[in-house]
Image 1 (cartoon, one colour):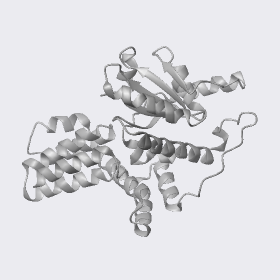
Image 2 (cartoon, helix red, strand yellow):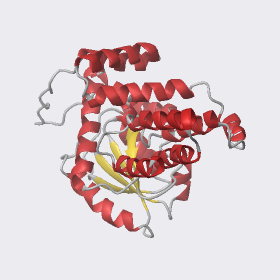
Image 3 (spheres, helix red, strand yellow):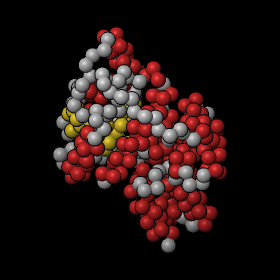
Image 4 (cartoon, one colour):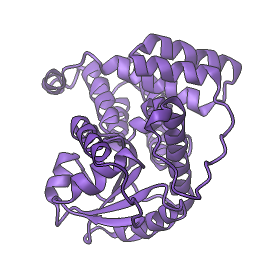
Length: 312
């Protein structure tokens, strides 16, 4: 499960606040005994069916939540791609589609800022997601990473793995995880961010190009910078244009909330209006935020161009 704490998962991650509800649902199912679980790979979800179709179902498989709107052109592009790639998993995940116009309370509860938004729900929590329209190849890679993380969770928690359907063969185990990645994930699970950072640094010393370690270290640093921040105080401090620290901390908080483009724009604006040491500090801070995302993330290319324009 620790893969879900990687900063790649911080991108768009939202705590549903429904962990207790999900565990109670799991207990109800266990008390009722095994039932036929055959279901379609795609389901339309409403406010009335959200608990059953998303929270309850996520206790046994990942639920890919497609928050869409008929008014959003991006939804028309992305939804068919999601249906295709989730369908290719052969029932190992389900696609739950939410029309945010018809079910606004779901969008509000998840703090959805724009559509389409995609969230992966597992064990009652949103573990990863994205907001922009991605090409099919990128969606497949995102989904592959999610399913790999789910498999790691089941390897660490074998009792939580749902029983295989009759005639279904267990998937072969993948290659063993790097020991420093495992150590970092275990440290994150236990709340020891310093130990997690040290493990990521060890891996980067051996393999400087390891993207998981780079993203992991950037994400841990992001969490450490914000763990004692008071959002209300940060908002108050933003009234002072000279308070550069407040601007950078606000960008960190935006990153953690999934507002990646907003965070990048905020720091780039600081770069534009400052000079000398302040400008260099903002630039280096932005590069650190870049490290928290995959190298091919579409937001990165846009932000790098904007940074170059601001600098030159």
